[in-house]
Image (cartoon, rainbow, N blue to C red; front, side, top):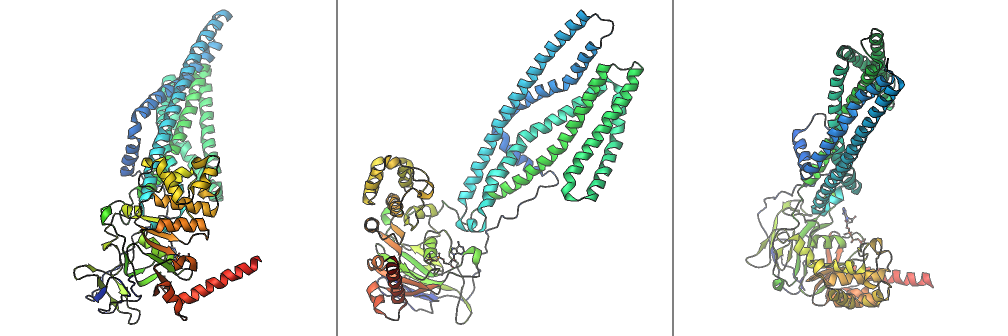
Length: 618
Ligand SMILES: Nc1ncnc2c1ncn2[C@@H]1O[C@H](COP(=O)(O)OP(=O)(O)OP(=O)(O)O)[C@@H](O)[C@H]1O
């Protein structure tokens, strides 16, 4: 067993307790820059842009590309339904003229009215059907676009390093996955179709106004601009009286006012034209309806624009997430042949601070060696960094590299450590069998580290799936593999006692199971992981769990974060974490023998606490 002491390695001091000799030498004093913290926070939400960003338009259109045929069909149906909608005022005008037909007898009028109404009913039904088809197709396309977008964003989130999740609020990510994707999907489908419809209907409405009565159309178009100006002035006045709270009210009033004035002017001019026999009542009605439609379409266009801008704003936030490159790749790097993997772990002069708390280092110049196939118990006061050590081993975070601060002289010194004449390592290196873990494929690395946590993470699915999850490829795991792992983990018996056996659903985080049952399932899962080394947290003091853990530890390198002396006694060595480094290291009995030692004090405290608990329960 070789354990390296804490603190900066001075000169060529080699502190090896047992096992492989390890020597250290300081190299040049040139300081290597600390890696810049490139994890960006994404808490600042991008605002909706004020101009149309061309690149974003292209990107959004690319999202719609797989749905192009469905969307094209939807646009086709939209044209049909809009044509019907825009022809309705014209035909309704004809219906009114038929009703007011002068000089015709009742029978002729009834016949004309009936045939016209039947024909119009057919046309309107077709329009309704086309509209239903449009809505259906748009909905399907929208949902598919949102689904694909969510899948890409989710995949991008999963690729990020753990530090990213420390900095980014979960609510922020969920908001992007749910709300922003929906807004983008909506802007490509519903909003786009509403915009197209508004443009089409406004154009058709104006054309029909000219068709029905060119002079009235000219009159209306002449009065619209001053009226719109009046409405804007009036709107501003309203806003100036009461700020934000009444903005919506002001806008509504503004629309209502200009619309009403327009209708009033059409009625006035139309009434005069009817009186001079230049217009029929039906034509006036048609014209009024077209005016109405044009007004609605223009209002629709303005909301189309603001919705589109919201879509771009949401898109920008999504691209930011989609384009984000993780600090280190998750599935690239060296993959060691299984037969070469022995499981020797070494921490060389490791310093580390969580990216979110750079000012509070967890480790400073920590060195530790765990020979292959041995059990290393890591103990230490709460918050001393036991779990952080495991996080570094799993490469959930990278240790700080290059520069370490000499605590006594405050001079920046770059250390280089070597374990043989040929292998040189900079400080801050963690190795497995001599390989810097930063050179290894993180996915492969994690697949070779089984972890059994005090609170195992179980998913709300069957016990079978929870165990199979440990395998590299869960789909290839046979029922026999799962049974075997469950037997070794002492879990088979209790699982079989459940009415649904291995198909029992364990609930959110395994709430339907006891703590010991959860741990044994986690052990069965870890057994399927082909782990060469294992990081385990102190388990529940249940003999079945303990026995299962001991079986799991066989032939593996184990780092066990322990509190109980019973667990620690089985370890080959104990490392005591304190003051950001390994304060003591050695065989359990040896450390217990040191009455002034930290380990002895920790164990005394532990025993004292257990005694106190027993007393309290009596
Ligand atoms: N994700 C994180 N971001 C910032 N600081 C963290 C993070 N996780 C842990 N820390 C801090 O790092 C220090 C070491 O924490 P760690 O969980 O490794 O301690 P521990 O020895 O395992 O504690 P315990 O025995 O209470 O579980 C603590 O001060 C803790 O507040």
